[in-house]
Length: 432
Ligand SMILES: *Cc1c(COP(=O)(O)O)cnc(C)c1O
Image (cartoon, rainbow, N blue to C red; front, side, top):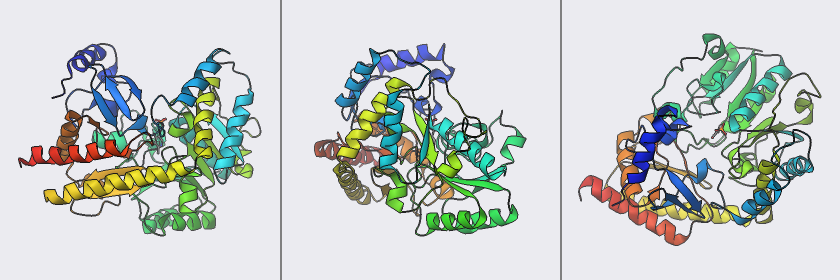
């Protein structure tokens, strides 16, 4: 039995000085209940908590640790660079290297601007789309998360779905009224919104493979349909690849789906665990960003040398070994097949969605294709499953509305252990 003695006392202490004891809501375990695990360190595929207990990690810091924790080339790059000071607020060679590296990996990126988070990347891309098109409204999808900027906190999946937050106090009606929403995978609904708001829509922003309502795949023709609609109506198509960028493939979801975006947002993997985001796209659009144009966007620590050194080290490894993506997918399929066996034997209704190294389990009798179907699944059962898995040393995301992320440090023995843990977790819950 895992005990969380240190985590419990640290959580008590944290709550005295940090709201809810955490610096990002999903970490609080509020929806699954219990005490959040305080992490002391991690190496490869494993997390170690403050009680010295080991876990197989399926969060990977929500994506960045795609090659495992404390990956040596990344750690060395940070250590080496730190000797040269931690920030200058002036241009560096590293920023050019990062931009060139991204351009060599991702399609449709002529110019790229570094920021400090995925949130910043998405909010800046929307500002740019509005500045470029001279239109105010944009369309997002129910259950897609694009960071915590005001205009995105409308039907925003992820933590908001976890906590059942419908409207966010502090977001003005004025801000929310320019955010139009449609169900994921519903092209007709999008076409109708565009028709109702003719020449008012600046952009459609989407997670091309959604990961903030569990993992949800775009159906055949959906993304292609959005692309055609955007081209016809002069709307910019923004891919929020904060999760999928450099995870689905070197060129992200654009490469895997074979659809071109006008603007792309990155985060997570791009910083190898440092606070980094980026947005980029075609020259004709990106030229509107200051100092070239007058769409203002800035950041004191943007392009920070330690963050660039870490990100470059990781991206170079991914570029040098494209077979990484095949290995990751094979491991994910192995996990999927193992979970399928165990879950079907249990007699439970369930759905496994998977794409590349993203996977999630919904306890549902129906296909999970959008937020409504994800929300209709048995999240209470997921929460029990989560805790049983945690007790067996398997660290899943603490919410049914989050994708699991595999990292390539996972061994097949780790996957076998995870599948066995799922079997005994289900047996424990079902009393078999
Ligand atoms: C995590 C995430 C963001 C926000 O990134 P932060 O670095 O947390 O600000 C935006 N979009 C998607 C798709 C994400 O998964």
